[in-house]
Length: 260
Image (cartoon, rainbow, N blue to C red; front, side, top):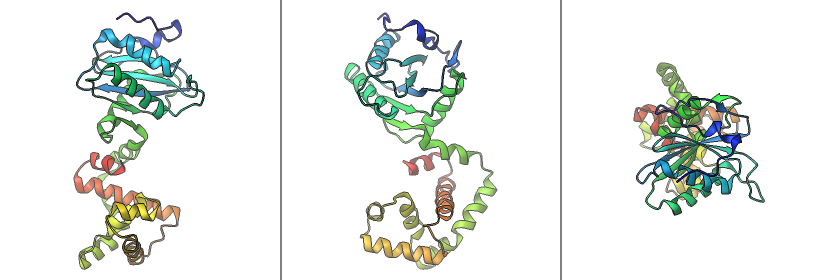
């Protein structure tokens, strides 16, 4: 269907990107926009319905811009803090609302979204799409996910393997040796304690009674002589445990799943 919703102000942003995600012209204008990669699986809409997708989006965000990337992918630019809703919503909530509306119009569609960080002024579409696609590959299999949940994965991909291994061993060797000697799994107890600030939630995730979990955590900390009330020690141990998960599974996707 023809697109009757595009204004002159977003004309430059709605030009089609080529198949590699490289826009033929323009960049992300201004710092008030948050990019979101909308990916369609089964049931992706035909190109003739892009105008309808934009119209649905404009009902939620009157400043929304839609840039087609390829048949199954669109880049959305969300104008933060300027939605029509009486109370401004987060970008993630706005995207959830958009996906719900799209599914009502395209009931056979399998659509998900990765919400990125705010785009820099003048940042090119190609760089934005490439970054979001990389996050999409690593992100947990959820309908809407923040690219920030993959930031640690991206960081660790650039760490030299031997340095990473030395760091993990330095932080966790004592507790790993204790587990091996006593047939325990205190490394997992420690990781869950760091994943869940609430001890009851951590115990539930470990399928343990809360008193048993607290007792095992205390044993782990005593064995390591560690203080997780110290922000620096807590961060070092948490990072080492996540890096250990990457090494054990042989790739970054395992880390993104554990972060999810």
